[in-house]
Image (cartoon, rainbow, N blue to C red; front, side, top):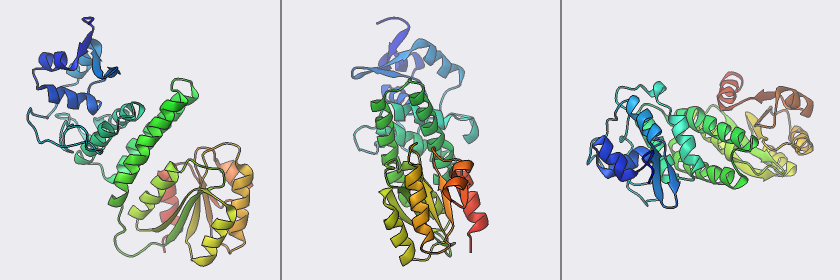
Length: 296
């Protein structure tokens, strides 16, 4: 092998750590690496970048753990925390992006665990790590740097992460109101809606998550059966303007419940033209709107 490309064992030897410690560094994205078949390989330049950034706090023989899927021992939620680095100076989102793009579910979950141990709460993981990572992946896909298959693989891992984190968003105290969240007919990208639903639950809203591809009459039926503080529509796929308009119109037939429009295909202008009451650019803005306008 070229002297500029190292194996995991060679990296472990150069760092003076156990092989499994080097493996954890790679799985958490602390050291950049790529797979050649079944073997991890590390560019020497990436190893030097790691060295210049300082050693980590994980000791050889640290507490063992397992991946989300139970396949590999990559360390517990307290493993591989960079020594002397505060939460804000550690590139958790970039590390998570790397694991998502590689389809590495276990490594992605280990990054999330480490970020939680460093001080993030589940809201922060969603809004400061996962959402920016997915946005960058989408941008890379648009530039042709990632294929369609790679984009789907990353989304699949993200869905599993959301499923694992979801139960941590528990409503505390009295309810701030009831909310319905869903995607209009033809919109199958429901990951953003699921993230928003969890975040709102964590902010003490009761949430009815309708999921993807919801016909307009189903939205209307749900709104007719229950009293809601507002209805959130997640719209990510261009070209669904008519479906969004039909959904908002159908909701209007059941009363004056406010409609919030969000998602990558939406904008302030489109929200106004299609009849929505409010627009949110991202999850953080949605939370701010919900707390300001609808907390009863």
